[in-house]
Length: 430
Ligand SMILES: [Ca+2]
Image (cartoon, rainbow, N blue to C red):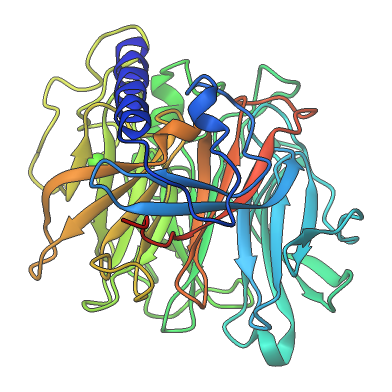
Protein backbone atom coordinates (compact mmCIF):
# COMPACT_ATOMS: atom_id res chain seq x y z
CA UNK A 1 0.00 0.00 0.00
CA UNK A 2 2.74 2.41 0.99
CA UNK A 3 4.64 1.84 -2.24
CA UNK A 4 1.50 2.44 -4.33
CA UNK A 5 0.73 5.70 -2.59
CA UNK A 6 4.31 6.86 -3.06
CA UNK A 7 4.15 6.12 -6.77
CA UNK A 8 0.87 8.01 -7.09
CA UNK A 9 2.23 11.12 -5.42
CA UNK A 10 5.30 11.05 -7.64
CA UNK A 11 3.03 10.67 -10.65
CA UNK A 12 0.87 13.58 -9.57
CA UNK A 13 3.87 15.76 -8.81
CA UNK A 14 5.27 14.98 -12.25
CA UNK A 15 1.99 15.93 -13.88
CA UNK A 16 1.82 19.17 -11.94
CA UNK A 17 5.36 20.03 -12.94
CA UNK A 18 4.52 19.47 -16.60
CA UNK A 19 1.35 21.51 -16.26
CA UNK A 20 3.09 24.39 -14.54
CA UNK A 21 6.01 24.32 -16.97
CA UNK A 22 3.74 24.51 -19.99
CA UNK A 23 2.07 27.56 -18.39
CA UNK A 24 -1.29 26.67 -19.87
CA UNK A 25 -3.64 29.62 -19.56
CA UNK A 26 -6.77 28.96 -17.56
CA UNK A 27 -10.19 29.78 -18.90
CA UNK A 28 -11.11 33.42 -18.34
CA UNK A 29 -13.82 32.71 -15.78
CA UNK A 30 -11.62 30.43 -13.68
CA UNK A 31 -9.50 31.74 -10.82
CA UNK A 32 -5.87 30.56 -10.53
CA UNK A 33 -5.60 26.84 -9.88
CA UNK A 34 -5.14 26.55 -6.09
CA UNK A 35 -4.06 22.92 -6.34
CA UNK A 36 -0.97 23.77 -8.36
CA UNK A 37 0.35 25.88 -5.49
CA UNK A 38 -0.32 23.36 -2.74
CA UNK A 39 0.63 19.81 -1.86
CA UNK A 40 -0.89 17.17 -4.16
CA UNK A 41 -1.81 15.20 -1.05
CA UNK A 42 -4.15 17.93 0.26
CA UNK A 43 -7.36 16.49 1.66
CA UNK A 44 -9.50 19.59 1.23
CA UNK A 45 -11.78 19.84 -1.79
CA UNK A 46 -11.40 22.89 -4.04
CA UNK A 47 -13.26 26.05 -2.98
CA UNK A 48 -13.60 27.41 -6.50
CA UNK A 49 -13.84 25.89 -9.98
CA UNK A 50 -10.48 24.92 -11.37
CA UNK A 51 -9.08 23.43 -14.56
CA UNK A 52 -7.04 20.23 -14.50
CA UNK A 53 -5.02 19.02 -17.49
CA UNK A 54 -4.97 15.22 -17.72
CA UNK A 55 -2.00 13.07 -18.73
CA UNK A 56 -3.59 12.88 -22.18
CA UNK A 57 -3.70 16.71 -22.34
CA UNK A 58 -7.46 16.86 -21.89
CA UNK A 59 -8.73 19.90 -20.01
CA UNK A 60 -11.30 19.15 -17.31
CA UNK A 61 -13.16 21.75 -15.26
CA UNK A 62 -13.81 20.71 -11.66
CA UNK A 63 -16.75 22.56 -10.10
CA UNK A 64 -17.42 22.19 -6.36
CA UNK A 65 -21.21 21.96 -5.84
CA UNK A 66 -21.16 21.13 -2.13
CA UNK A 67 -18.41 21.19 0.49
CA UNK A 68 -18.42 20.39 4.19
CA UNK A 69 -20.02 16.98 3.70
CA UNK A 70 -19.24 14.16 6.11
CA UNK A 71 -18.14 11.04 4.24
CA UNK A 72 -20.65 11.30 1.38
CA UNK A 73 -21.27 7.73 0.20
CA UNK A 74 -23.99 7.65 -2.47
CA UNK A 75 -26.08 10.00 -4.55
CA UNK A 76 -29.14 10.14 -6.76
CA UNK A 77 -29.83 12.73 -9.45
CA UNK A 78 -33.54 13.54 -9.52
CA UNK A 79 -35.36 13.74 -12.86
CA UNK A 80 -36.14 17.43 -12.28
CA UNK A 81 -32.53 18.13 -13.32
CA UNK A 82 -32.09 20.43 -10.30
CA UNK A 83 -31.91 18.20 -7.27
CA UNK A 84 -29.28 15.75 -6.07
CA UNK A 85 -29.73 13.59 -2.98
CA UNK A 86 -26.47 12.76 -1.19
CA UNK A 87 -26.03 10.35 1.70
CA UNK A 88 -23.56 11.12 4.47
CA UNK A 89 -22.33 7.87 5.99
CA UNK A 90 -22.76 9.03 9.64
CA UNK A 91 -26.50 9.05 8.97
CA UNK A 92 -27.80 12.07 7.11
CA UNK A 93 -29.48 12.51 3.73
CA UNK A 94 -28.66 15.89 2.20
CA UNK A 95 -30.20 17.87 -0.64
CA UNK A 96 -28.19 19.82 -3.21
CA UNK A 97 -30.60 21.95 -5.23
CA UNK A 98 -29.49 24.24 -8.06
CA UNK A 99 -25.90 23.73 -6.95
CA UNK A 100 -26.52 24.77 -3.33
CA UNK A 101 -26.31 22.44 -0.33
CA UNK A 102 -29.41 22.85 1.82
CA UNK A 103 -28.53 23.29 5.48
CA UNK A 104 -31.15 21.00 6.95
CA UNK A 105 -30.82 17.24 6.33
CA UNK A 106 -33.86 15.34 5.06
CA UNK A 107 -36.05 14.11 7.90
CA UNK A 108 -37.15 10.49 8.06
CA UNK A 109 -33.89 8.57 7.62
CA UNK A 110 -34.08 5.24 9.52
CA UNK A 111 -32.28 4.79 12.83
CA UNK A 112 -28.90 3.32 12.04
CA UNK A 113 -25.57 2.34 13.55
CA UNK A 114 -22.72 4.41 12.07
CA UNK A 115 -19.94 2.32 13.58
CA UNK A 116 -16.52 2.25 11.89
CA UNK A 117 -17.32 2.41 8.17
CA UNK A 118 -21.00 1.54 8.50
CA UNK A 119 -23.94 3.91 8.56
CA UNK A 120 -26.04 5.32 5.75
CA UNK A 121 -24.76 3.99 2.47
CA UNK A 122 -26.46 4.34 -0.89
CA UNK A 123 -29.55 6.17 -2.13
CA UNK A 124 -31.42 5.19 -5.28
CA UNK A 125 -34.60 6.26 -7.02
CA UNK A 126 -37.37 3.94 -8.19
CA UNK A 127 -37.39 3.83 -12.02
CA UNK A 128 -40.83 5.51 -11.85
CA UNK A 129 -39.75 8.04 -9.21
CA UNK A 130 -41.28 10.95 -11.15
CA UNK A 131 -44.75 9.46 -10.53
CA UNK A 132 -44.32 7.48 -7.28
CA UNK A 133 -41.58 9.44 -5.40
CA UNK A 134 -40.07 6.22 -4.07
CA UNK A 135 -36.52 6.41 -2.69
CA UNK A 136 -34.35 3.51 -1.47
CA UNK A 137 -31.68 3.73 1.24
CA UNK A 138 -29.15 1.08 2.30
CA UNK A 139 -27.81 1.27 5.84
CA UNK A 140 -26.30 -0.66 8.75
CA UNK A 141 -29.01 -1.83 11.12
CA UNK A 142 -28.80 -2.93 14.75
CA UNK A 143 -30.64 -5.99 16.00
CA UNK A 144 -30.53 -8.80 18.53
CA UNK A 145 -27.87 -10.66 16.54
CA UNK A 146 -25.58 -7.67 16.04
CA UNK A 147 -25.57 -5.47 12.97
CA UNK A 148 -26.39 -6.11 9.32
CA UNK A 149 -27.25 -4.38 6.05
CA UNK A 150 -30.85 -3.27 5.53
CA UNK A 151 -32.73 -1.70 2.64
CA UNK A 152 -35.42 0.88 3.43
CA UNK A 153 -37.93 2.51 1.12
CA UNK A 154 -39.84 5.75 1.56
CA UNK A 155 -41.41 8.63 -0.35
CA UNK A 156 -39.51 11.86 -0.91
CA UNK A 157 -41.74 14.90 -1.40
CA UNK A 158 -38.86 17.29 -2.02
CA UNK A 159 -38.40 18.04 1.70
CA UNK A 160 -38.83 14.93 3.82
CA UNK A 161 -39.06 11.16 3.65
CA UNK A 162 -42.38 9.62 4.67
CA UNK A 163 -43.74 6.06 4.87
CA UNK A 164 -40.18 4.83 5.49
CA UNK A 165 -39.88 1.13 6.25
CA UNK A 166 -37.43 -1.72 5.76
CA UNK A 167 -38.28 -3.78 2.73
CA UNK A 168 -35.31 -6.11 3.11
CA UNK A 169 -32.91 -7.01 5.95
CA UNK A 170 -29.89 -9.07 4.92
CA UNK A 171 -28.98 -12.33 6.60
CA UNK A 172 -25.51 -10.91 7.21
CA UNK A 173 -25.46 -10.29 10.95
CA UNK A 174 -22.22 -9.96 12.84
CA UNK A 175 -22.21 -9.63 16.60
CA UNK A 176 -20.46 -6.89 18.50
CA UNK A 177 -20.58 -3.15 18.64
CA UNK A 178 -18.55 -0.04 19.12
CA UNK A 179 -15.94 1.27 16.76
CA UNK A 180 -13.70 -1.78 16.70
CA UNK A 181 -15.94 -4.83 16.64
CA UNK A 182 -18.86 -6.13 14.67
CA UNK A 183 -18.59 -3.43 12.07
CA UNK A 184 -17.09 -4.97 9.02
CA UNK A 185 -17.93 -3.85 5.55
CA UNK A 186 -21.53 -3.74 4.48
CA UNK A 187 -21.52 -3.21 0.72
CA UNK A 188 -24.83 -1.49 0.11
CA UNK A 189 -24.65 -0.31 -3.50
CA UNK A 190 -28.13 -0.18 -5.08
CA UNK A 191 -28.83 -0.26 -8.82
CA UNK A 192 -32.09 -0.74 -10.72
CA UNK A 193 -31.95 -2.69 -13.97
CA UNK A 194 -33.93 -2.22 -17.17
CA UNK A 195 -35.92 -5.21 -15.91
CA UNK A 196 -37.25 -3.00 -13.12
CA UNK A 197 -35.47 -5.17 -10.55
CA UNK A 198 -33.16 -3.92 -7.83
CA UNK A 199 -29.60 -5.18 -7.44
CA UNK A 200 -27.96 -4.79 -4.03
CA UNK A 201 -24.43 -5.64 -2.91
CA UNK A 202 -23.68 -7.11 0.51
CA UNK A 203 -20.08 -6.84 1.77
CA UNK A 204 -17.93 -9.55 3.29
CA UNK A 205 -18.71 -8.28 6.85
CA UNK A 206 -15.14 -8.96 7.93
CA UNK A 207 -14.70 -7.13 11.22
CA UNK A 208 -12.53 -4.03 10.90
CA UNK A 209 -11.72 -5.21 7.36
CA UNK A 210 -8.32 -6.34 8.57
CA UNK A 211 -8.75 -9.53 10.54
CA UNK A 212 -8.57 -11.99 7.64
CA UNK A 213 -10.96 -14.10 9.68
CA UNK A 214 -11.50 -17.36 7.75
CA UNK A 215 -14.79 -18.07 9.53
CA UNK A 216 -16.38 -14.80 8.40
CA UNK A 217 -14.78 -15.10 4.97
CA UNK A 218 -16.28 -18.49 4.28
CA UNK A 219 -19.76 -16.94 4.40
CA UNK A 220 -19.19 -15.44 0.94
CA UNK A 221 -19.27 -19.06 -0.31
CA UNK A 222 -22.35 -20.06 1.70
CA UNK A 223 -25.67 -19.84 -0.09
CA UNK A 224 -27.38 -19.73 3.32
CA UNK A 225 -25.93 -16.28 3.99
CA UNK A 226 -26.26 -12.92 2.20
CA UNK A 227 -22.67 -12.02 3.16
CA UNK A 228 -20.42 -11.53 0.12
CA UNK A 229 -23.27 -11.59 -2.41
CA UNK A 230 -25.01 -9.55 -5.07
CA UNK A 231 -28.77 -9.77 -4.54
CA UNK A 232 -31.67 -9.33 -6.95
CA UNK A 233 -34.96 -8.05 -5.54
CA UNK A 234 -38.31 -6.74 -6.73
CA UNK A 235 -39.05 -3.08 -6.00
CA UNK A 236 -40.92 -4.05 -2.80
CA UNK A 237 -38.05 -6.23 -1.51
CA UNK A 238 -39.65 -9.55 -2.47
CA UNK A 239 -37.95 -12.26 -4.53
CA UNK A 240 -38.26 -12.42 -8.33
CA UNK A 241 -39.42 -15.92 -9.30
CA UNK A 242 -36.66 -16.31 -11.89
CA UNK A 243 -33.76 -15.74 -9.47
CA UNK A 244 -31.11 -18.45 -9.91
CA UNK A 245 -31.52 -20.16 -6.52
CA UNK A 246 -35.30 -19.97 -6.16
CA UNK A 247 -36.69 -23.36 -5.13
CA UNK A 248 -33.46 -24.66 -3.60
CA UNK A 249 -33.84 -25.51 0.08
CA UNK A 250 -30.13 -24.96 0.76
CA UNK A 251 -29.99 -21.40 -0.61
CA UNK A 252 -31.40 -17.95 0.09
CA UNK A 253 -33.54 -16.98 -2.91
CA UNK A 254 -32.41 -13.33 -3.10
CA UNK A 255 -28.90 -14.35 -4.20
CA UNK A 256 -27.96 -13.42 -7.77
CA UNK A 257 -24.18 -14.06 -7.63
CA UNK A 258 -21.84 -15.13 -4.83
CA UNK A 259 -18.21 -15.35 -3.77
CA UNK A 260 -17.68 -11.57 -3.63
CA UNK A 261 -15.49 -9.65 -1.22
CA UNK A 262 -16.53 -6.01 -0.88
CA UNK A 263 -18.64 -5.19 -3.91
CA UNK A 264 -19.23 -1.45 -3.94
CA UNK A 265 -19.95 -0.77 -7.59
CA UNK A 266 -22.55 -1.89 -10.14
CA UNK A 267 -23.24 -0.76 -13.71
CA UNK A 268 -25.04 -2.13 -16.74
CA UNK A 269 -23.11 -2.19 -20.00
CA UNK A 270 -25.07 0.13 -22.32
CA UNK A 271 -24.77 -2.17 -25.35
CA UNK A 272 -24.68 -5.73 -24.04
CA UNK A 273 -26.94 -5.09 -21.04
CA UNK A 274 -24.59 -7.18 -18.89
CA UNK A 275 -24.26 -6.27 -15.22
CA UNK A 276 -20.69 -5.32 -14.27
CA UNK A 277 -19.45 -5.17 -10.69
CA UNK A 278 -16.31 -3.93 -8.96
CA UNK A 279 -15.03 -5.15 -5.63
CA UNK A 280 -12.29 -4.36 -3.15
CA UNK A 281 -9.66 -7.01 -2.63
CA UNK A 282 -7.54 -7.07 0.51
CA UNK A 283 -3.95 -6.01 -0.42
CA UNK A 284 -4.17 -6.21 -4.18
CA UNK A 285 -6.93 -8.27 -5.71
CA UNK A 286 -9.37 -5.49 -6.63
CA UNK A 287 -11.64 -6.94 -9.31
CA UNK A 288 -13.95 -6.00 -12.13
CA UNK A 289 -16.46 -8.77 -12.83
CA UNK A 290 -19.19 -9.40 -15.39
CA UNK A 291 -22.04 -10.96 -13.43
CA UNK A 292 -23.97 -13.97 -14.68
CA UNK A 293 -26.89 -15.27 -12.62
CA UNK A 294 -25.95 -18.05 -10.20
CA UNK A 295 -22.20 -17.90 -10.77
CA UNK A 296 -19.48 -18.02 -8.10
CA UNK A 297 -16.87 -15.24 -8.27
CA UNK A 298 -14.42 -17.04 -6.05
CA UNK A 299 -13.81 -15.10 -2.83
CA UNK A 300 -11.98 -16.31 -0.77
CA UNK A 301 -11.08 -19.49 -2.68
CA UNK A 302 -9.33 -17.51 -5.40
CA UNK A 303 -7.98 -13.97 -5.14
CA UNK A 304 -4.91 -12.21 -6.47
CA UNK A 305 -4.71 -10.27 -3.19
CA UNK A 306 -2.73 -10.83 -0.06
CA UNK A 307 -3.90 -10.94 3.52
CA UNK A 308 -2.82 -8.06 5.71
CA UNK A 309 -0.30 -10.46 7.21
CA UNK A 310 1.40 -10.47 3.78
CA UNK A 311 0.45 -14.08 2.94
CA UNK A 312 -1.46 -14.86 -0.23
CA UNK A 313 -5.22 -15.23 0.29
CA UNK A 314 -5.12 -18.33 -1.87
CA UNK A 315 -2.37 -20.64 -3.09
CA UNK A 316 -4.37 -20.87 -6.32
CA UNK A 317 -4.99 -17.17 -6.86
CA UNK A 318 -6.41 -17.16 -10.38
CA UNK A 319 -8.75 -19.96 -11.18
CA UNK A 320 -10.39 -23.16 -10.09
CA UNK A 321 -13.04 -25.15 -11.95
CA UNK A 322 -16.48 -23.67 -11.36
CA UNK A 323 -15.24 -20.23 -10.35
CA UNK A 324 -15.42 -17.09 -12.47
CA UNK A 325 -12.33 -15.10 -13.41
CA UNK A 326 -12.46 -11.32 -13.11
CA UNK A 327 -12.73 -9.32 -16.33
CA UNK A 328 -9.96 -7.14 -14.98
CA UNK A 329 -7.85 -7.08 -11.82
CA UNK A 330 -5.96 -4.08 -10.49
CA UNK A 331 -2.37 -4.09 -9.40
CA UNK A 332 -1.60 -1.68 -7.82
CA UNK A 333 -4.93 -1.37 -6.04
CA UNK A 334 -7.41 1.30 -7.05
CA UNK A 335 -9.91 0.66 -4.20
CA UNK A 336 -12.94 0.77 -6.51
CA UNK A 337 -16.05 2.34 -4.96
CA UNK A 338 -18.29 2.50 -8.01
CA UNK A 339 -18.28 2.08 -11.77
CA UNK A 340 -20.07 3.90 -14.57
CA UNK A 341 -20.34 3.32 -18.31
CA UNK A 342 -20.26 6.77 -19.86
CA UNK A 343 -23.06 7.17 -22.41
CA UNK A 344 -22.91 10.92 -23.00
CA UNK A 345 -21.30 13.02 -25.70
CA UNK A 346 -20.04 15.96 -23.63
CA UNK A 347 -16.51 14.51 -23.49
CA UNK A 348 -15.21 13.66 -26.96
CA UNK A 349 -14.00 10.07 -27.21
CA UNK A 350 -15.25 8.93 -23.83
CA UNK A 351 -18.51 7.31 -24.89
CA UNK A 352 -18.77 3.70 -23.62
CA UNK A 353 -15.67 4.10 -21.47
CA UNK A 354 -15.90 2.57 -18.01
CA UNK A 355 -15.15 5.02 -15.22
CA UNK A 356 -14.04 3.85 -11.79
CA UNK A 357 -13.99 5.94 -8.61
CA UNK A 358 -10.95 5.11 -6.49
CA UNK A 359 -10.80 5.57 -2.74
CA UNK A 360 -7.28 4.94 -1.38
CA UNK A 361 -5.81 5.48 -4.85
CA UNK A 362 -7.32 9.00 -4.84
CA UNK A 363 -8.22 9.08 -8.51
CA UNK A 364 -10.78 8.28 -11.15
CA UNK A 365 -9.80 5.76 -13.77
CA UNK A 366 -11.09 5.48 -17.32
CA UNK A 367 -10.99 2.01 -18.87
CA UNK A 368 -11.56 1.26 -22.52
CA UNK A 369 -13.84 -1.72 -23.22
CA UNK A 370 -13.82 -3.24 -26.71
CA UNK A 371 -16.78 -4.60 -28.68
CA UNK A 372 -16.25 -8.04 -27.17
CA UNK A 373 -16.60 -6.55 -23.71
CA UNK A 374 -12.92 -6.90 -22.80
CA UNK A 375 -10.82 -4.27 -21.11
CA UNK A 376 -8.07 -3.15 -23.48
CA UNK A 377 -5.00 -1.04 -22.88
CA UNK A 378 -3.91 0.75 -19.77
CA UNK A 379 -6.38 2.62 -17.53
CA UNK A 380 -6.19 6.39 -17.75
CA UNK A 381 -5.76 8.00 -14.34
CA UNK A 382 -7.71 11.22 -13.75
CA UNK A 383 -7.83 13.90 -11.02
CA UNK A 384 -5.09 12.39 -8.84
CA UNK A 385 -3.74 15.91 -8.29
CA UNK A 386 -6.80 16.76 -6.18
CA UNK A 387 -5.61 14.40 -3.42
CA UNK A 388 -9.18 13.31 -2.66
CA UNK A 389 -10.72 9.91 -2.01
CA UNK A 390 -13.47 9.22 -4.56
CA UNK A 391 -16.52 7.43 -3.15
CA UNK A 392 -19.13 7.54 -5.92
CA UNK A 393 -19.67 8.78 -9.44
CA UNK A 394 -22.72 9.38 -11.63
CA UNK A 395 -23.43 10.82 -15.05
CA UNK A 396 -25.63 13.91 -15.27
CA UNK A 397 -28.27 14.50 -17.92
CA UNK A 398 -25.96 17.04 -19.61
CA UNK A 399 -23.14 14.49 -19.79
CA UNK A 400 -21.05 15.84 -16.92
CA UNK A 401 -19.65 13.49 -14.28
CA UNK A 402 -20.69 13.98 -10.66
CA UNK A 403 -18.35 12.62 -8.00
CA UNK A 404 -18.38 12.36 -4.22
CA UNK A 405 -15.11 12.77 -2.34
CA UNK A 406 -13.76 12.62 1.17
CA UNK A 407 -10.44 13.61 2.72
CA UNK A 408 -9.76 11.42 5.73
CA UNK A 409 -10.78 7.74 5.60
CA UNK A 410 -13.16 7.58 8.57
CA UNK A 411 -14.39 9.53 11.56
CA UNK A 412 -17.98 10.55 11.96
CA UNK A 413 -17.14 14.19 12.76
CA UNK A 414 -15.15 14.82 9.57
CA UNK A 415 -16.51 17.51 7.26
CA UNK A 416 -13.98 17.31 4.44
CA UNK A 417 -16.29 15.67 1.90
CA UNK A 418 -17.55 17.21 -1.31
CA UNK A 419 -19.76 16.85 -4.36
CA UNK A 420 -17.91 17.87 -7.51
CA UNK A 421 -19.06 18.22 -11.12
CA UNK A 422 -16.49 17.33 -13.79
CA UNK A 423 -17.11 18.91 -17.18
CA UNK A 424 -15.06 19.65 -20.29
CA UNK A 425 -13.06 22.88 -19.96
CA UNK A 426 -12.78 25.23 -22.92
CA UNK A 427 -9.63 24.77 -24.96
CA UNK A 428 -6.76 27.03 -23.99
CA UNK A 429 -6.45 29.96 -26.41
CA UNK A 430 -3.41 29.68 -28.64
CA1 LIG B 1 -13.13 -13.06 -7.70
